[in-house]
Length: 445
Image (cartoon, rainbow, N blue to C red; front, side, top):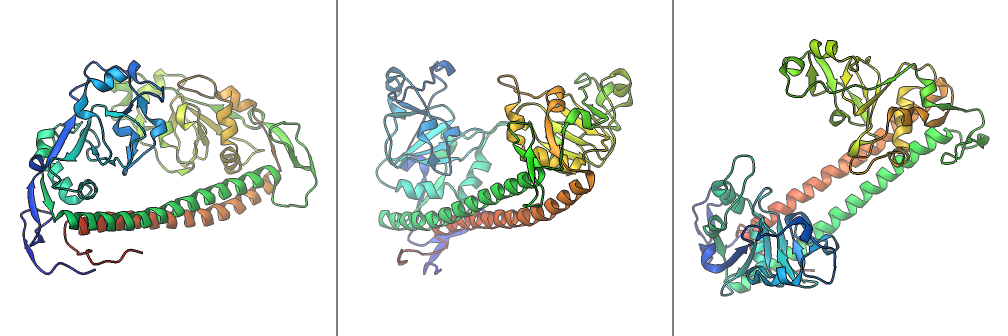
């Protein structure tokens, strides 16, 4: 891509020159900037789902300039009218100013009246000095984030004030050129986003294929011609005629869990030498280490804190991690959210791990509770599965190891391609919107 014919010096760490005919100005001199001043008494109970009322946009509602309006809450007309300075218009640019600073939304077409929640700023030009699409792209550059890093405040929760945003030096070509740049980036980023979407869809299809292959192998075996019989389990259906049906609890000599020694008590946690596994460690594969340890004193004082041998299979029983597993390559204790399976002469643990992956949705459906659903040890023990003898289980495991590695390799490669496309998109936006390349004469097709 060609460069501009002449440049002039510009004093920024990430941008040392801009095209000679471009100008720059403090953002506060060219832009309207407003945010909700505090909560103005707005309560969580006022977040309504009545779709006939004005929208109340939060930073959680958008990512990369896209918003799902059906997920946005609403506020009353009175709440909307009390803050006219943050009533939104088509063409506005919104930015998060706290927490994850710099998440952006370009308002292309409002589906109705809309206002801002706190933690957001709305930008619109004062006297048409900038095109809002051009601004939307410039705020995605390293150049703008350099300003954020220099002006943000806070220790663990960072924010950038409206005043600090006003000190940002916006770089500006002519209005005509801004529109040319915005049109070019609209076109190119749409192409890139479409390609990313296709690759993400391809990954979804591969994941579905992976699940289907695992499910077929662990419930029907590898021989498509084998005679089948009714398993006697309604949700499982038929299994190969020579397979047996086992309750998991009858197939293992030991199924157990653990506990959490008193939190904050150093005698149980400080300088611990005994592994203490939590559900956050589980990786749906084999695991070589865990992140936390407890002391010998904890093992002595808590009878429910037991050591499980290397080679055991661990499953998460609580919350969002239900059904996640790992085969551990180390001796460990666990917290109460883990269920550990060990010592079976009937079921190969790798076979059971694949079976759990195939039937994860069924396991989740067995969970009880509201905000924090869980499955108990007893629920897991009572699950009945069909399985062949150990020799055939090992053959199935060997087959699935090969097939899943093949699929996972393709998924990993595709994910890397997606990351490269995202990096290319970011670099392209930065180069074009800061004048490192000239796209005025590019013909879009």
